[in-house]
Image 1 (cartoon, rainbow, N blue to C red):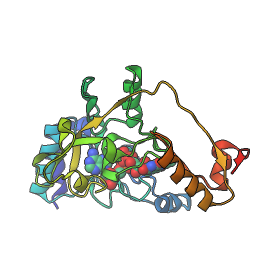
Image 2: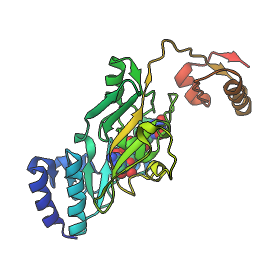
Image 3: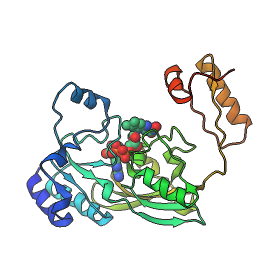
Length: 275
Ligand SMILES: Cc1cc2nc3c(=O)[nH]c(=O)nc-3n(C[C@H](O)[C@H](O)[C@H](O)COP(=O)(O)OP(=O)(O)OC[C@H]3O[C@@H](n4cnc5c(N)ncnc54)[C@H](O)[C@@H]3O)c2cc1C
């Protein structure tokens, strides 16, 4: 691995300010939210910082960074919001590619209800932008304030407080493959693919098959009203049965979240209707 030569070439490509190879800037990327690493840190163990962090600002820059990584035999770890709870964004000795400079909203098509956005955009910022215009992704994982569009897709996230999981929103993806080739997968505005649909290869891949740089997402108008109901059930079986009957018998969209006693107390308090 010829790290020094790689970083020199990357500096020329991205500018010195977008290559961090020493100091405090590195330590912010030493871990994600993986509980094992957080515990280690709490117990006073050192967690190595990555060898470097690089910050591409365009799709062409990502392509060229990946090509240079091939040339010099350097491994790369994409990093979005760093909120992975399974160590997905942990560098493990690789150079971190911080995606957050790629955060532009590229196209909003109000007629087709599609939004094309760069992968490093934070979900909270995209949602705010849409809300101001009367639309929503309705994608609210508990890490809503932290995660990026690319990280959500790479992780295959579920919107635990919303109507949508990420796979229901992604119409197409642009991915820089490990050889530096840029590919587009998914039907885009055609909505339904009539050919092998490769989106699933990248959704939930944790970045193993390429760096997601752009996505076209489905949006919907903000609902004019929501109804929130909370019930307390005697056991899990009854709660699941209720959820099943609700989804079958009441027209959607629905969001059903089943909490255990502890998280239920936190989320909705103890009072409720005993079913
Ligand atoms: C408090 C908390 C609550 C959470 N709640 C939920 C929840 O309700 N639902 C849920 O699904 N998850 C939840 N998570 C997990 C986490 O938020 C998700 O895994 C999220 O999708 C990660 O997005 P990120 O942008 O932070 O990605 P990161 O953590 O930076 O990266 C996640 C993975 O994706 C890869 N990656 C990042 N960006 C790209 C890219 N552009 N191209 C290719 N690969 C990339 C990384 O290498 C890594 O493998 C929670 C996490 C926390 C800390």
